[in-house]
Image 1 (cartoon, rainbow, N blue to C red):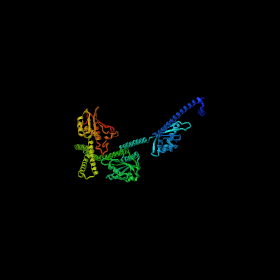
Image 2 (cartoon, rainbow, N blue to C red; image 1 turned 90 degrees about the vertical axis):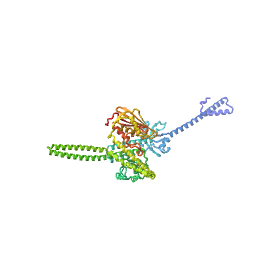
Image 3 (tube, rainbow, N blue to C red; image 1 turned 60 degrees about the vertical axis):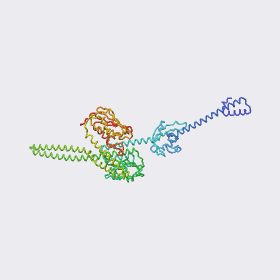
Image 4 (spheres, rainbow, N blue to C red; image 1 turned 180 degrees about the horizontal axis):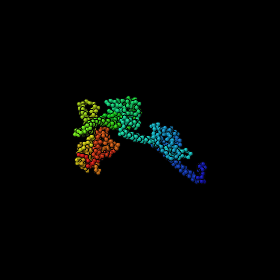
Length: 639
């Protein structure tokens, strides 16, 4: 009998018959053989069943691992139908969207997009289903926990199973941080463009009031704040006048006055002479908000001093009605706007003073001219009346020529007096400064041990400011001499001159200055060239913050010039400050902690250019700095 052809039911029936026969001792060898084969098949079936169970268990474990990988993947996954209904999603997608997964299943995905982005999503999903091609879009999604997220959606059409409708698989990637960085970069670019435009307006010579109006508008737009203001310190220094502003109630700008005492925010800003940031004015303990801020519900803000020569011009400020944490970039932007205002205000003041001098000179010239015209008319009348008196006329002409010569000498002398005005004025400033310094010294000596710590600190600060003012005056005097006072030409051994210069600087023990051995000998102005090297070497070591400082002085032949270099391994200078360091009164350290006058490098640049050369800076942060300047091999200056 062919058992392989029997059905399962027939085979079981036949097996029962054989077993019964075997039990009764019937069936013979054939029955025993069949029973043996059945036993073997039963064992094989048990083995196969065990293997199937193990395979099923492995399959279930693999499915669990896949489910975990799917649910906890860093990317959200959603399966959508043609109408954008959520058919399936992983836990990551559920967390991104906010509600529980059960609540999201069967709901429209578009409902999770912000109002303005829903149409964009529907257009995206429709294009994927119609084209069958992969689609990508970026939009803003709602999140019940975090508010909103910026998402990148990548959708691809899935091949439908038999009897199933079309669906697409959408990957959700959170690009919120990337979007924030891009927006911050865009804001920074717009801010810098605004600062550049404001600087161009200042250079164009617009009125200060108009420049202030542009500045407050720029600050309001650049920082997205509710209020901006320019407060001008009025004579006497007890109040500040709201000269320009944005956001204030009508009629306040141009009328309001604010106290300048240090118990108010603007007064405290003037007193501290540094940016003052307020996160919550309602909890501020350093000062109280003036009525102007309280009346407008101000909560957060920044105030920055608008500096001026001698005393500050006032305070530049921004404010918001909601609590806000400001960044360092916000402060830098506001500082840049304030610096442009300060520079233009000082320039206008200088122009006004110069115009006054010019007007006075014009009056004197007109008076002299009128006198000369009157004398000339008298002479012409005398010539007409006394033509035959030639000798008398000649004498009168000679007298007139002498007067003209005298007037010319007088005019030249007046011009020289005007040229020396800044020089003499700077000298006259030193006497009261010395008096202030002496008074401070006497106070320290007479009141030693009796003053509070804060009073001692104020006296030290006073002496420091006097010393800084003396440095600025000395720098201005030296700066004014360049171009007017020139030293005699002589043969100068650069190696020998550098040795004397380095010795005169009295360098600290931790400073090493290496001078290249191939220094040339020049026929030039020893004093001015020595000043250039002294200022560059002193600048290299002044800002060094570590225990060791190394400076290298080199030279390169450049045709009709020698190119000298002064390099260091100090903290370096960021590229955006390469031009700034050559400007008057510009220092990279805060002025309250810097012992620099801000004139040294400006003096170097003026000397080098006055003597026909040029100077450049190569540096980056933490990479040291190298100053290179050119100097004519053969000076054309008069002795």
